Length: 220
Ligand SMILES: [Zn+2]
Image 1 (cartoon, helix red, strand yellow):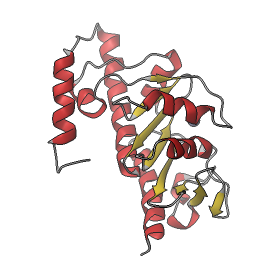
Image 2 (cartoon, protein in one colour; image 1 turned 120 degrees about the vertical axis):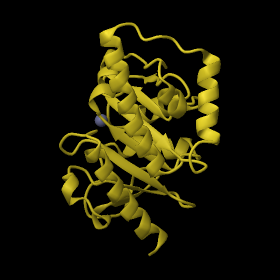
Image 3 (cartoon, protein in one colour; image 1 turned 135 degrees about the horizontal axis):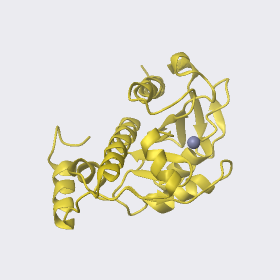
Image 4 (cartoon, protein in one colour; image 1 turned 90 degrees about the vertical axis):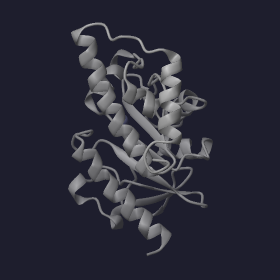
């Protein structure tokens, strides 16, 4: 299989993780991947049911969001994904969801402070809030890039909107979206039940360093 055919299959398959972990409703939510070594990305078509997504109906766009291959319109969030790939060369995958708990924090414009070891592992501290931005044009992409550049977190909660995550590849970005919702749910429950206990910055740093560099099978 060619690199492009393989990437189309990967991006189509990863969308099943969004429904498996209940991060999306109807056709909202999308995954994209950068095509390695080329100024291209693979992204979901707009408005197609998750059950009908396949390698064949994925859309290939250039990094200005212009369709290069595909019969359908690309995701309405294509401009935001493309902006991230243009501005952050280390990013190989981008995911967007309106997952319930994380988006509830976004609705309040409140960053998720780090009170959990799992959050320290994956996000290295708080999950930040990005600015309010309307769809269409570069405002969402700009907000994502400005918030995540120099930040440990691979997830940003765009105010009044939802979650965008980045990763070295599409799978890493999907994992960040799953973990963001998991953390947001637990943090919400902790807040409802009382006042979450603080964690020392040194402990957060140590957990993050261990998880990113030692844990698992070297890398995520
Ligand atoms: Zn959205």
